[in-house]
Amino acid sequence: MTASVELRDLSKSFGETLALDKLSLEVAEGSVVGLLGPNGAGKTTLINCLTTLLKPDGGTARVAGFDLVGQPEKVRASIAVTGQFAAVDETLTGRENLVFFGRLLKLSKQEARDRSQKLLERFDLIDDADKPTKGYSGGMRRKLDLAVSLVVERPVLFLDEPTTGLDPTSRDALWASVHELRATGVTVLLTTQYLEEADQLADRIAVVDHGRLIAEGTPQELKEQTGGGAVCEVRIADAATRARALTVLDQAVERDEAVVVPAPGIGTLSTVIKALESAHIEPDDLTLRKPTLDDVFRSLTGGSR
Image 1 (cartoon, rainbow, N blue to C red):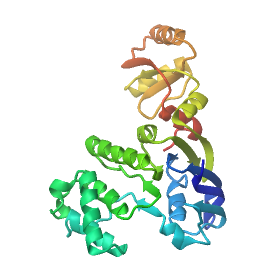
Image 2: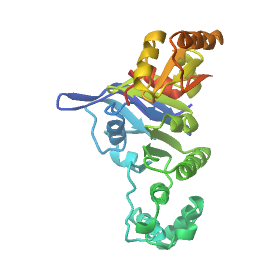
Image 3: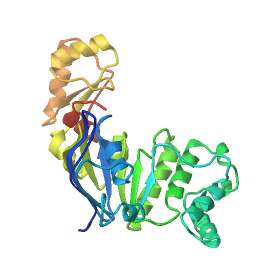
């Protein structure tokens, strides 16, 4: 399958800080790839390089078939970008924002109006199309921001934490939009702090830490590879009790006040229960479940976000 984004040993430093360390990655045409990693892992630096905002120090990259360094104008003409914060003019209406950007991108007046109408309908903004965007909710602004990035159709879309700060309803609507874009053949590279988001949207996931690619695969492959099978999760809110439980079970504690124990068989559950009972520890909740991307993330990065 053709790669829409292809990186080979891409490197970028800021002084003595190595943000990208010979990172190699391929994003197949028409796919959604989720880029995960702790804060400071290099995700935003990578997006800034791929969108020509930063020039890499070494390695090569091709986006939509064009060389990142040698053909930056052609790369820019092939990509759409939605950053972490909505970049719309609050004094303009939603429709006016779309028409404005359409005209900037050299659409005729009629083409800009027609395209704006289609995007307003597509993102369910038609009822508020002629209201100033300063009155839009956060979710509406994010949808408008995504619509703005699609005023001119481009084969590659970069989404840098697109659902930050959105309520669940707005988040679900944006997820649906990404699914629709993928169905039309658009290639999407998505950075996110929300592992559920990557699980829902991505065909493949790339995990980056300290500027390096440390794992790659489908969500299921990563769970099977790193999760080690089912896990028994013990939730204990009280810190002192949780500390005693850690000693009893000799396992690591999660950030969300949970103790996770690998569970190669269903007998693990009874073993955990017996161990806690013998120590007179009563958990707030105890479940046996399959591994999640949270478990994968913690295993690969040491638990940091």
